[in-house]
Each structure stands twice: as C-alpha cells, then as structure tokens.
Length: 503
Image (cartoon, rainbow, N blue to C red; front, top):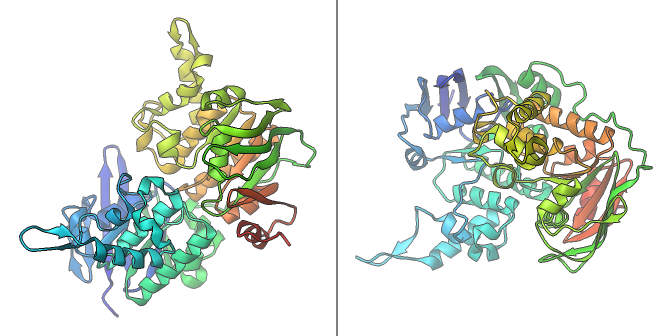
C-alpha cells in the first residue's frame, strides 16, 4: 500500500470553552481529491488550519509523505508544499493581479541590486491565468476592481504557481458561476494527473459528488463517517452531516400563483457605471423571483442600484405602484426595500461589534426615545431574533466576527427581518453556509414569501435557483435576457445566461 501523502491521526484542538476537534483522523493519497464536509462548527476549518500550520494541534499527529510535520506557521507549510486557499480570500486588494500572483516569491534579476523581472513574471502569470480561465488582460488589473468570482480564481492561480503537494480548497466555488466551476473541475483533474493531492471543503453537495474521489464527514468535532465514490449521494451526505434525514430540502409551502400584486417594479432602469441597456422586471407579493447570470452579467450591480448604493440615472423604480426615490441605502431601508449582500463580512456586518449591536443598528428608531436606547426593548429584540433564527452564539454580546459563516448570515437576516421588509433582495443568500443552516434559511425564505414578502433572490447555485424560485429572470452582459417560469431547467437558464434563447 503506497504511503499516504497526508495522514492526520486523532487530532484534538480546544479553544476556551469549546472543543473544536476531538480525535479526528483522515488519510489522503497522492493524486486523490478528498472532500471534507460537515455543518459549520463541525471542525473542518480548524482541521485544515492545523494541516496548514495556522494552528497547532493540542494532541494527535500529522504526517506528510510518511514524515511527522510540525509547522511553526503557514510559511513553513507553504515551503513544504501545503497550500491553503481560504474561503475569505487573502489577496492584497490594492495591488495588481501580477503582484498578487508573485507576492513573496518575486522573480528578480541583476547582481548586487536585485530588480523585478516583470517580463518573466508576466509570461508566467499569463499561463497561470489561462489555467483558471481568466483572460491575460487581467494581469495589470488591480484586485479591488475584480468581481468576487475572478478574485477567487486569482487566489487559485496563485496556489498553482507554487510547488504544491497538498492543495486545500475551502469553499472554492462560493463566488464562481457554473462555467467557472467547470473550469475549476478541469484544473483539479490536471492537479490529480500531476500527483497533487487535494483537500476539498464545500457545502455544495452536488459538486462534492462531481469531483471527490472520497468523502470524510465531520460532525461536532468528530469523524461521523466516510463515503467511497460510489456511495456519494445527497441523502447519504446529509444523513452523516446532520445525523438525520432532511426530507424536504427546498420547501415550497407558499403558494405563488402569479396573481400577486407587483411590489417592486423596474421600468427601463439604468445606473451610473452600468450598461446602456435598461432593465425592466417586477417582483410580486408572495413570490420568490430567482435571478441567474454569469459573473459580470450585472446582477449584483442592479440590486445595488435599487438599494441606493449606485445612483439610478434613467428609468423608474416603483414600490407598490408608487415612484421610489433611492438616493442612498437609507432611503431604501426606510421604504422597506432591504438587501442581504453577497459579501456579508464586507458589506453586511460590523465584524468587530457584537451580535446584538448588528441587530440593533438598523432598528434603533423602534427601540429608542429622545433619552436614548431603551435597553430592555433592545434586549428583547436581540433575544427574539437570536432564538427565532437559531443563531448559535454564547450571547448577544459575542463579536459577530467570531461566529461561523452560517450564523453570521442569520444575523444579517435578523437585522432586516426586525424591520418587516416589503422587498427582500438576497444576493447569494447561502454563500459559504452549511447544509443544515441552508435548510433553515430556505425554510425562512419560504415563510417570508408565504407572508406576502416579495423576495428577489440572486444566486449562482443552480440547485438553489431551480429548487426555490417561482420565476427566474436571467441576465446576460447587463441586460435582461429572458424570463422562465414553470418547468425550470438548468439548460434553459444557461442558454439565456450565455446569450442564447430559452428554446
């Protein structure tokens, strides 16, 4: 039997008041793709950070190609060929793509005075970007100017430029379109062929089945089970992850008949920095309108225009048939048009502040008087939404940045639901959220639609789009390419998203 590329034996890690790992073991063969799945808080990220030198295990052993390893930090891991691509990207936003690809390993020339050999770096960068499906003209672009999906691909390209033996991918497709995800599968296949081992963490169970050779499931910091390739099914994965069956993953208890009154209507809307092509569509009371499109199609930008982040330059936005002027997000919030953003950490939360602070922030008017915040009412507000959304937190005083991704997302929902939304815009509503939390969020979205809220859901997750939407509007290069209803299929969505017709 060949020596495992990586072997973890009975790893244990304890933080104050929390046992994150309790005797977890796994093996990874050369050239194998091993998926590690589990709900948020199951211990996946802690395990990966131990392997990558970010944390030190309290007990247990880690072997690389049969040799014990004791990384003092991530730099030691990188030098040994163990690369971790974090879900929350680790790029220098103010630098160019080229600078990020070679940060810390620049190519230099000269004698005593070393200077950057940018020509050689550009040639290598072009090849790396080609491998991940990005055009060469991105080399000179500042990272801050790229959409989230392209930033993710730059991070992957940077890892490919190293002498990697073990590549750890934490939610690598969370910002990618279907087309970019297919490119990633090709990259992973090439890595396997080159005998590189891949640890793959994802909440998207369909892609786990697509690319994993084997799956290790964690639950509550322990090994919950393992599945061979032939046994990887949605039901088997969910059963091991949550310890129970999720009989109805995509609930549709609300009755969207198509007769609901339009709540939000866009009539030939254009916005600053957007395309010349105007956008028109409507979202009705009690329905979930899905919006699909490839990265760069303009979905997020259009939602930001409606929310007042981007100035509307032409056309009209109507709320319940009346003109809605949104000069800023405050105008949209006051009107009951609320946005759960794609990047919750950057745009949805104040990470250094508490769970309670974040829930209170947009709701101060309802819990304050001219004498200040009524603390008892504030405490009741926190208690109500923490309990209703099952936010796993020691208390409302816990810094929200210390919560898992799924619980952070619930806090974003909680602060808006406390306002009683008329229109709820969801941009990638379950990005980086585990399967159990996803089921809870889907049930919440279904409940909101059942209560008459108009839900506009932007998502790149095809299963989510087809499973939750009553209607689907598809965007292509800044324009509304078409609308689909009844008998929704992935093929019809992708035809519109790539510039074709629905039939």
